[in-house]
Image 1 (tube, rainbow, N blue to C red):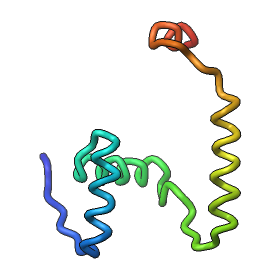
Image 2 (image 1 turned 180 degrees about the vertical axis):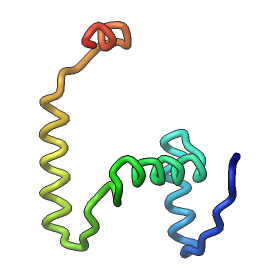
Image 3 (image 1 turned 90 degrees about the vertical axis):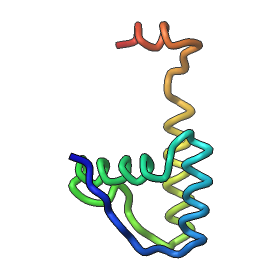
Image 4 (image 1 turned 45 degrees about the vertical axis):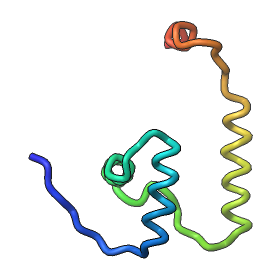
Length: 83
């Protein structure tokens, strides 16, 4: 059964998140549900909260470097053959 969660957040935070979710083809509800499912999977926050810009940048750079090294596929069929 679905349930409703009411939260309080800053109007600007909601609006900015809504824009991001929309660009990803997601509703705000779907985006929040993805977050909640990741919390369950990780048994905690799916990220390490920090306000240290250097740590954020270093993490971003490391993830980007890893993604660049990942094998690329030209279409879905070739990607599925990799499994």
